[in-house]
Structures are given as structure tokens and as C-alpha cells.
Image (cartoon, rainbow, N blue to C red):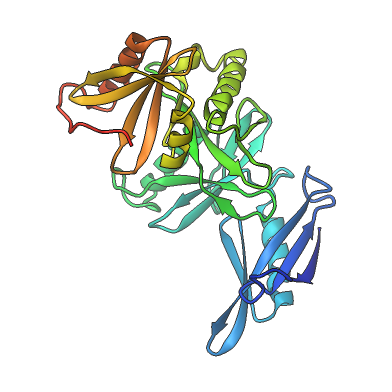
Length: 318
């Protein structure tokens, strides 16, 4: 690994005076990769302090060279089985960061000086890690509110990025599937990891959400991890994503389940029920062959979540 400091000539050079160019030669399986990591500067006791953040971890130094030397040590320490993390889990209240790696068809999360947890499904790894952290009271006592949040890694800077939505399957008696979807602004695409590979589609005026859903559901069915494509749901879409997708759909009607009214749309091939998560200002989709199929899926989800039979306030789509 070679790290070269270059001066930042961009408009943000006052806050980010340098860029650390990280070239990977033999450290990981991604030999030949180059990353461009910002070096920030701030004031501490009247003196400049340089800090660099990758994978959610931060190193500091009194000089840019000292900070980059510590960056090199940090990156070497994050390598596991010749891989850098694919994701990290973040526990906000306890301020824990837990790297997650992809090896073949499995993902595994590590803990400092403790066990690693692995499974073919990211959802199960999060469950195992969360149980362990609560049992050890590292993340609060069991049943308390601290949760693990997933973050992706921006491929250019190694900084953290939030998911733009999720693809998930929660069917009674089946192993849960849960995949965060990220945006790559430089490529004009969205992507996720499923069935041992990166699955990517380019932005298409809102259609990219369902285009990615189609690709992922097909590979999961081939991998025998999904039985029906409509069992896989796009969830927690941001309002602007939903508005773009909505413009490609036609209105089909509405359904009311447990006091909640959901509008239903159609994209020409199947029906889409919209659940408004008003407390988060995000949206969840239920897919089905027709409006009756959507109703069955909403009822099953509400039953699992303990909402059936308990009237809820009517939710209005934006």
C-alpha cells in the first residue's frame, strides 16, 4: 500500500487542504484499486489538527504526514481475509463501529477482541451481532433501544454512505433477507449486494427502484433464497424517490387494513401498495399480482408487526 499526499485545488481546499491518494498493491484482493481520501483540518488549542475518516473510523495528527501514517496503520488493521469492509454496522448511542466483510456467499461482522458472526444473510449477521452486544451490555441491556444501523462504503473516498432504501423479505418460516441499497452519484446508479455479487442499475427517472428489485429477486430465486418475487419488498424509500417512481405508475385504487388506508398503483405488470411511514417520512412498498394479492401481503405484514386488529391513524401518501 502506498499513500501519497497531494494538495487539494478544489473549492473546499480551506477545510480539506490535502487528499490522501491510497494505492493498493498486495494488501487486499482489490489490488490495483486507488482511493482518494480527504484530509480535513481543524483547530485545537490554536494549532492545526489534521484528521482523516475511513469506514467510520477517524485518525488524527499534528501534521498531514502524521495523519496519513496513522491512516496506513488503520487500513492495514481493517483488512480481514485480504478484504476491506463491505459495510459497517454503527451503534449510535454506544458509539460502536463494527466492520462487515463479504467472503464468497457469506458476510461476517467482527468485534474488537471478540467473536465474529457469519451467515449467508446480512440480516442474520446483524441479529447475531446485536444479540451479542446486548448480552454483553456493550450496546445497552437486552431489550433496550440502541440498534445497529448499516452504512455502506463510498468506493472513491472510503467514507460512509447511508442507504437510499432497502430490499427485504420477511416471510413466516423463512430466513429473512435484508439488503441496503446505495447510490453511486458519480456513476448515476443505485446498487446493492446480493447472491455473491454487486447488483447495479442506472437511474431511470424512478424506474430504477423496480428495475433493481427485478434483478435481485431473479438472482435470489435462482439461488433458492426466494420463492416469489413479490415476497421481496422495497422499503424506506425517501420522498423524492417515491415521487419519481409514482410518476411512472397508474392509480389502481386503495385498500384499508387495520384502520390504515393504503393507495394502490400499477406499473403495467403488477400492483403496488404504498405504506407511508409518517414518523420517518419514508415509504414502504407492497408488491403483488393484483390488488387482492397486495391486501394479503399487507395483512400478513401487519399481523407480524402487531398492527392487525388495532385501528391506526389513516396515513395519506404525499
